[in-house]
Length: 278
Image (cartoon, rainbow, N blue to C red):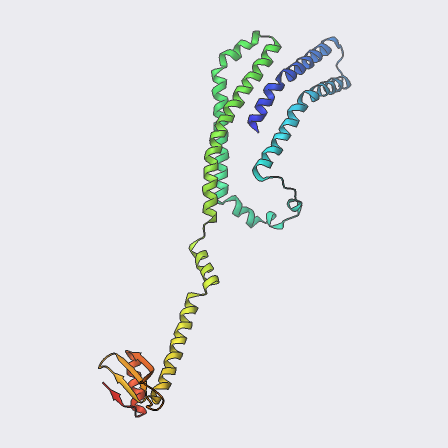
């Protein structure tokens, strides 16, 4: 917008300069010819000056409005909504306001604005000091030359500010992109919560598996008394088999276990007189 304003100002500066020159000529002429300066007279001069200046600055003002609308459309597209006009009580909440005021984003915005102000101030002081001798020489120049010089200096300042802000905008775009990606990332707690929602609570799943194992072990303990024999090795394993010559071609495993479960199966087998073979 500032770059567009500078270009528009360069194109419209002849019209503005001519209007300002005529306004100053009219004002000084009226003041020198008028013997008695009254409030109504001063109001009339001011009104005439504003009326003459208005047409000269209308193209500049309309162009700035058009540039602002164009910049907004290019960034976010054409959107018309009344939601922004709806009252939001959280915006007037002191607690919410303090959180926004002392947030990381607020600090970054403050430092960015402060840096811009320092850059703009440095540019203004630099140009002023570099043109100090020329400014002192304007005392012998005509009003038209002074106005032309002022507009030229203003355009130079605006051009340097545009270049500086464009450089800042590039780095700001990189930072905003990085900050946006960081905001999209999930924290460890959010990842855990999402896993709980999609896959279930790990502790609950572990408890379910434990209950399932206990139920499976209980069923096997119920099958051991039905076995015809319990085959074990001396230390770790127990296998309960059932065999009926008339119904089965080979023995069938109806329960098995290792370690503690194997010893538990041996105890149940002894209690129910099931033969144990090692």
